[in-house]
Amino acid sequence: MSTNTASALSAAASLLRQARRIVCLTGSGVSAESGVATFRNVENGLWARFDPQRLATQEGFAANPGLVWQWYMHRLDAVEQAQPNPGHSALAELEHRLPVFTLVTQNVDDLHERSGSRHVLHLHGRINRFHCNVCGFDHDLRSSERRATAPPRCIACGGAVRPSVVWFGEPLPHRLLDKAWQASERCDLFLVVGTSGLVYPAAQLPLLAQQHGAPIIDINPEVTPLSEQAEIHLAGRSGALLPRLLELLGKET
Ligand code: APR
Image (cartoon, rainbow, N blue to C red):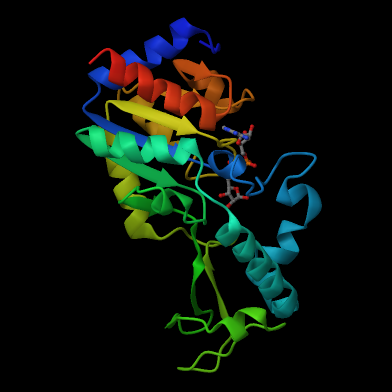
């Protein structure tokens, strides 16, 4: 069902009220209203303006580590200047209110945590964390290193330090993916917010939940492959629709 009418919102709120174990998967759309760029928007998406092969792969980092480093430091600055929006806050409130709520994100920003979400599974890593690309040693950065035109050197092995994000062609952190997978198999409702659902294995999670009998609610101004699969697609911005869902949830309990 694809609509943003009051009846669909109320249907979504009643599914939320009945559910006992919820998984929510977010994508960059949940941070769009905070001014953080999404990836595939044809006008202002990152991949519409930058080449992912040159900036988000091991090969790109090997070919031009300085370019990749500076690009991520630029994105990190944008994330740090951004503020969580009402969509982030509503998800933190849902985590607080609902018995079991697992928040899985593809986002590398920390806006979920800054809005109060506690247990966020970052499947694609975190842009404000760093490790050595060779030995894996974790690094805290001095601000001068962030301003540098080349990645800092690892204090353990001398290798290049990189942001702890998952690049194309790299495996996801398997402990986190296992947790997300198991939660999706066991949940009784799956909420998808602000993702195009084009990147796997993250996009597999709602389908896995559906195969195990859980309905999907999808929140996205556009219709995506996941919207087509969802029991309810709420066509609109998460910063507007999630607080409304919370309101409806609150009102009728
Ligand atoms: N509220 C809800 N959804 C929104 C909003 C909003 N305010 N604004 C945009 N969207 C939707 C878009 O319609 C689009 O479907 O968010 C989605 C963003 O999709 P992508 O740009 O493809 O980003 P995402 O799904 O997060 O990408 C997945 O791809 O590039 C890799 O690792 C990167 O984690 C990323 C992964």
